[in-house]
Length: 144
Image 1 (cartoon, rainbow, N blue to C red):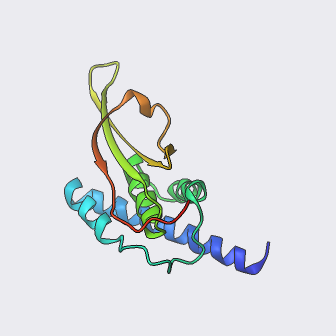
Image 2: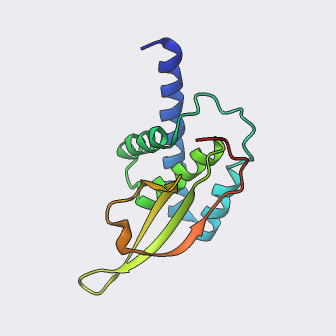
């Protein structure tokens, strides 16, 4: 693997891991509304400056790997981290938070991220949830 590509992947995985840890800590201490506002603050308008950008599936894979090293990385933690990474690269996405009734009657919540018409993260059984909140960041779109 060429050195430039290796460094790009290391940066990508480091960014994913740091975001997962950050959102895990924030969700532990702050209400969800404040964490969503912080996610938006972490996402300045895309200006083409993010190096080693990656595409949607590559970013989702980096988040998946990072979450394995971040105890307590729930679907919401992973979805927030991916949503921010996509927006930082000018890639439009929608973070959805939904709810469904479990078989035992309790309510369950789930978060997932959609990009370019497909679910990138959190798609396992996501169609049984009713989306209650959809979050889109304004960004200058680049072609995906």
